Image 1 (cartoon, chains in turn cyan, orange):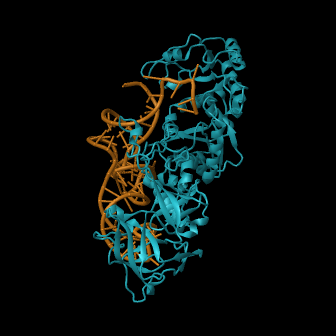
Image 2: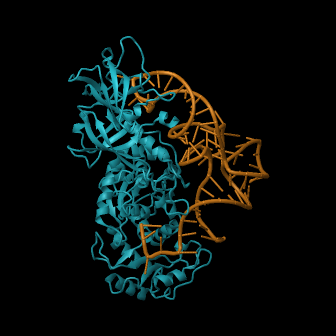
Image 3: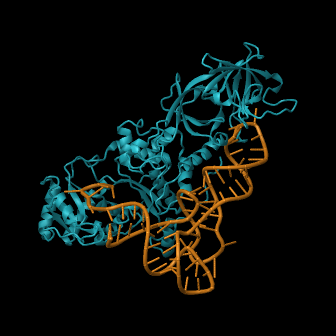
Length: 556
RNA sequence: UGAGGGGUAGUUUAACGGCAGAACCGUCGGCUCUGACCCGACUAGUCGUGGUUCGAAUCCACGCCCCUCAGCCA
């Protein structure tokens, strides 16, 4: 199979790692991780992060961990944990047994919190959430100290232990780091480390009544796992100061946080909140809707892990906010599917053609190679031919425009792998709509070559009517009509594309009868398709993964 | 407007004081039993103004524009 891996291009993270290795910062070691919060499904943006982290570990001979950032039991569910593992595995990132949870470290985190209290670097605050907000100050004004900031170590320890024991109501107290209420980094204005939550955790059950915040848990988890390069997205740039402060204050193994720009794609939305709304309000049919760029949606749509990897390699990584043209994704999947898929014939919008000089009841069959693009593969199948066939409605024009190379009255074209035919008549219904074509064929052109050397301008695909397999084919288009649906004042829902899903009754060549969900094909001259989960032996259902490029349609 | 980040072809990126290069998109052409693939060509760029230097996308200064931070979310 063709190697789709493009040469590794440099990026700023590799530069940092190269420098670290040159200076021996981590003894030349690279250990990365992917740290999802199990409160939703993974999407193409997460795939960028997964492939980045896993790829770095691979390329530098290091290790890659999967760690669930499960510090908020009110939002997280086991269902998501299972789904995320399935998706990460499918993408090809192998955590090799190093599956962790932030909740694995709750005990250690608690001990470290007491350590900070004893060092006078953390205190229990009785202020309400609203009061804490007021005391925090604003972007331009410093905050002020909480009246509880100077409690004694003993009192703090006592209160904190009782928080842990579940003696207090939710929201009544928090543990805060004692840093600097006047810091220009708002994240350093005595950040909350623990909040009281009488919630059941998917993994620790009811063992805890206090839960660590992200900032308190993340860097320490990295340290415990000996992560060297902790890669996250740009919005955590300010948090890095706190990340460093905690590791420094605790005197534990250091790791470095590096931020990169998250992926944005044109004609879709990527924020968790917006995606949830699309699912909950039924604008898409669940998290695996093929119009959705979730990992499950992509998988159902017919994308492969290789195509996604090719895409994430293509777009690179940087710190500049960007909006990637979705056509890059389509290019990547075409490139992968082009070498991978067998070629079959399917007619999406059938128009019947009766070949008048072809004897009634006669049947022909053609042995057609299934992988004509790959000379090393010899698979083929028999395709039946008969007097009545279906062709694509688009492949006929009663009054052909300039440059049209397909069938038209009096015009001869090649039926792919079969015969030359010439259109002799057009049959219309009372409304003037074309319902059938009449044609003649040239028996001497069997197999698709003419012995006299005459050429035809067009080659079209077809399916024998008698043998055709009816199927439902789902044609997907971009979910939104605007490149950036979140832009502009209006609700992004107003930018949904009403034609993002079109279902047609297609006619397929009979070899497709045995196709099972997940199987991928190129419907020649049309696009790449895969068998959908809804497909049954009685009722085949296909998804269009992506159309073929069509320079003719574009020019019209 | 306090602080942290960022601005290279239409898009995504490389070049890290020494020829601004690639991919995608687009246009044109070649090839073709897929108007696909493939091949070739073309279009097109360093946010601005100064400065340092033999030489600046890169270093410095001053501007401009964009993003992030005021959750007991992550």
